[in-house]
Length: 314
Image 1 (cartoon, rainbow, N blue to C red):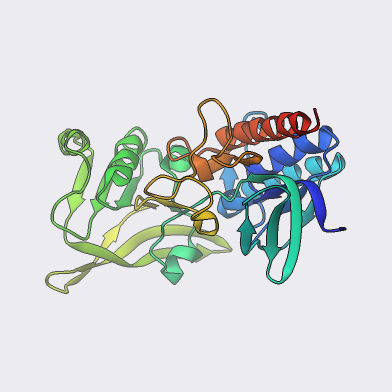
Image 2 (cartoon, helix red, strand yellow):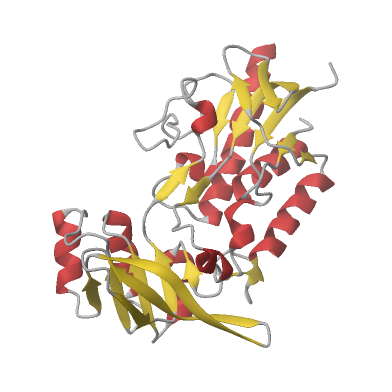
């Protein structure tokens, strides 16, 4: 069957491509299904300054192109198709891209997680130009500036607290009149002199300027959900702190996951509950969610897959 492969990798961020690189160098000829967002979340990031080896920083899409090229150099191939269905009952595992079926001796799941967003056209327009979904990635760029964090749970409070290291003021905009975050997190935020709260409010629009092709956020339009009053607020950055959703709907009922949907792996490995299926990157990581940690688990998944395949032939 020409559609059969030793290793199939679903997803193409730092985890997927690192897994592809290691699997290719192990002569496993991996096939990467790059899916609907080739290159993963980094392709919507403008500049990456915290990936080791790039002292002057690198643009997110450029970094992912380099990952892809390196994996291809050793024999990995990419298919720009979306896996729509899987059957992990027993190896060889079956995967479908729409009506076309593929099979694999081992599968590495690296489908990542998507930041929950507000779905505003203006949010999309300024993503990477002042709008961000990752404070630890982008906080450094907001030294001495005023920023807004959207949300009221632990994610929002963590992001806001982290941002106070850089920003001059952090305003938390929350649609309710009380936080959902844990009491300890709330206490820390309320004691922080740099953090202010805007209650009962939602962002209607991200405001910005575009001068000579250089985009920048200048503020937001707010709506009070109780009174309906509209106001504007100045800010040079808007951070989405409403959480992440792992891209795992495809694997429900087949792979073990937590209550949010993150895939569960065995301690000190990338093994899922199905022998021969491995998980790498943000799809199994609700804690760090960094390109470098995703790449590290991609390497682990490829080594785990190689060893597992060898054990099947002994």
